Length: 275
Image (cartoon, rainbow, N blue to C red):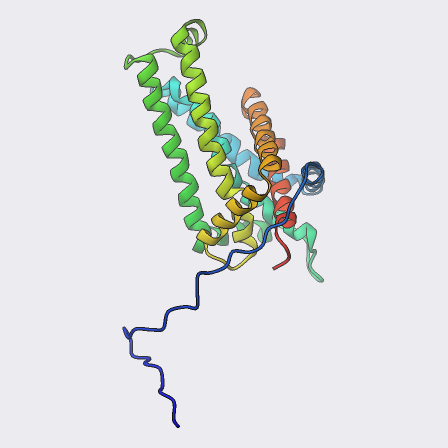
């Protein structure tokens, strides 16, 4: 008996898929893994220092320009939230370092392991397809945090336009200022951990595998859910290293950002079984 041919007419109803797409399996990791990936990140930084310093300089100069712009527009109360927001978008702005780590990890059989043409060409190609959507998500997270920071600033400190010195005095010498610090940093920590959960391995995963950004984000959350304590330590480590960079006037980013970028790549490699 002849079987019916499926209808391939444009717009025709197609059979439903067999079920929802299954997320990749994730591995358990420990504190020793965090120590090891940081050591590997430092090794990659020392091996490819000229490329790393180039990328880090772009982000540091961009940060300085943003801070100067806020000061020029008399918006000093947004300087600290913007600086803290660097941690939100760090996994994405570290994308250039994933290229370096991957090339060092699996050197090609012929040709140079690294060159400016290879590194810059690969970075350019990364901003299309699913990574472009991921950039939009992380950028939205930063703007969302900045909006919350502005609302809290107005709620606690009033709508007056204050100078930088007056702002610092009000924050550290008044009960309202201390409450503002407590509430603001708590809100920032919650938002940062949420962003961290969906981005900690999703961006290197998008760079390495042919998947959609929703699957990558859900896989990242799945990985954090399996390793909550270790990932809390990793999140705190990133926050501490970024804080040191901020206290140094962003100069520390020249070392911290490359090391964290490379370490994130190696953490991703341990988080998932081979594709």
